[in-house]
Length: 295
Ligand code: GLU
Ligand code: ZN
Image (cartoon, rainbow, N blue to C red; front, side, top):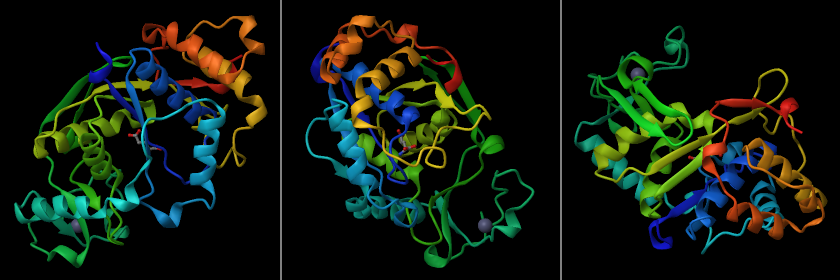
């Protein structure tokens, strides 16, 4: 593969600081791009202001810089992309591929998060509620570079899903698909918590005539209680002075070999070395790895 043909990205949500699990995902994505001389873009997924943690955006950029994870070009902000999202929602609604849903949370209890289609044929006006995309009664499948074949029946396992919320905020599924295509992303490397979101994204790509990127989902780093690492566990930004040891730990979490000489190296040296030796085949073929198992 030549450098022109690979475009990767990291797409953090500023609902909290980067934690060790997000560092693992960012590092894998960066290495996969840099190992082939590809581009690595940065997109701030700031579509949910009420959930945003004050200072998180700046802190995320700061951590990436301090850890040597340099990106190409300007940061893309989803908060500046509303027109593009609206245009697609409007079109899908007009074509009858999406519809307004006025169901309350209470009405949807007991369906295990699978929307039962109550508003499918009620013809609510567009701005009356949330906007849901009709899903076909079909299985969507893809070959993940680490996790192997993944498939999901959209009708039975997901149901018609929200692309714009009742409060007019845009849904992640829609924004991520439009922006990955708009930015020309060829390769998505991210945490395995998003594996089961991918079939919805494949359906959107198909519907909108967008090309399908390659996917690589890295294991999620979990707490002893099985929970994903997240802002509830990690309230502080990743420490700058720990960049080298944490990068080495993240490399080991990705199954990459490290040597003790690197413990004294600067983050950029660790990264350059890791990019030369990047071996995606060595990534554990697991959905999650407990943090306690890492050394
Ligand atoms: N913004 C999402 C998150 O932080 C990731 C989106 C993606 O990589 O597709 O979980
Ligand atoms: Zn409804």
